[in-house]
Figure 1 (cartoon, rainbow, N blue to C red):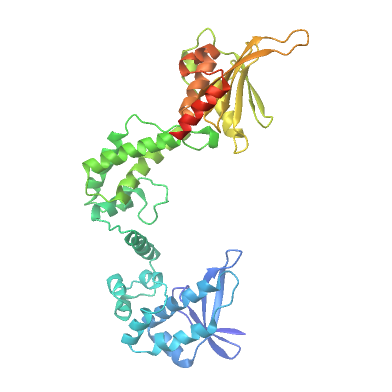
Figure 2 (cartoon, rainbow, N blue to C red):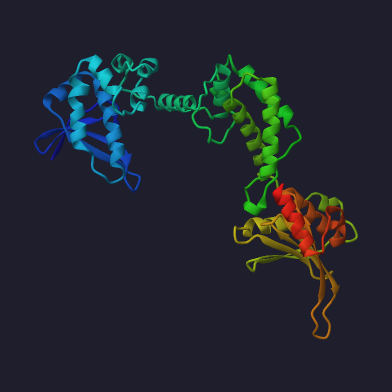
Length: 415
C-alpha cells in the first residue's frame, strides 16, 4: 500500500510517500531498457520530511545529490540505498557551511538547481546554500541546457562574447553544435541582430555562386564532401578576415549554415544534366543499359522523361553500397560503354574492336583513367552520354596498359 504524503507543484521533484509502514523519498530518474523512466525509493525519517516540507532549497539539493546514485544504477541495477540514506542528514540537517563543504566533495547533478533558478555564479564558487535562495518550484529546462552548453565550451577553453552567443542563437546551435543550423532571427537580442546580419552577409557574399552537389554513391541525400569542404573553407576565411574577434564556434556555425542551405538546395533539384537537353552531338545516346556489380539492371531510352545522366545517377543512388561499387553504362548498339570503379576513383572505357562472329568472342579495347571525385565521374558520364567513348578523349589521359595505370593510381594515392 502506497500513500502520497508530500509533493510539490513540479511533478519531477522527489515526492514523499508512505509505503509498508515507512516514510520514503520517491523519485523518477534515468530509464530502463525500454526507455521508460525508472522509479527509485529509499527510507527517510520524520525529521527529514519536516525539512523537505519547509525548505525548497534543501529539497532540491537532496535531489541533486541523489541523482548520480540513480545514474549509477543504470537500466536495471538497484539503487545504493545505504549511500542515499547517508546523504539525508548532511544535506537536510547540517549547517549551510557543512552543506557547501559536502557538495565540494561529492558528485552531484548541477542541472536541477540551475533549472530551478539557482544563482549560477554562486554555484560555481561552491556556495550552494546561498545560491539556492533564488530557487523556485517551477523549472526552466532551457536554462539548464544553456548552462551545460557553456560548461562544455569552457572545458574546451572557449568563452563566448555577446556577438558569438548571438550568432549561435541565430543558427540554433547555442545549445548543441550538432544541431542542423537554421535562421532564427527572433532568438537574437534585437540590439545585436544588425551585427549578426553583417556576419551572415559576409558569409553569403563569400560563397555566392558556389554549390554543393549530391554524391549518389552514398545514397539519395548525401552531399559531395569536397564541395562542402571547399565552401566551408571559403566562408571561414572570409568571416575570420572581416570579423577577427569571433571565436571558432561562431565562425563554424556560420559556415555550417551556408553549407547546409546549399546542400538543401541541391537535394531539392532533380538529379539531371541540363546540357543533355541542349547540347546533343551526333554521337548522343538514344538507348543505354545501366548495370551494377550485384546483378541490378536498368534501361534508359531518350523518349522517356529523364535524361540519361539523371537516370543513371538515380540508379546509383538506389543501388550503391559498400559491397556494390562498380557501375557500368553500356550502349549495346554502338558496342561501347564505361565502367565506373567507385572504390578506386577510376573509370574504364570499353570499345568493341571486333564483334564476335561464328562463335568467336568479341575483341574489346579497354582503357583506364583516374577520376577526381564525384565531380569527375559526373563529367565522364555526361561526356559519354553526349558523344560516346570518343567524347571522353579530353577527360584522359587514358591508359591501355594495366601496369602503367596501377603505377599512376599508386602515385596519386601516395599524394
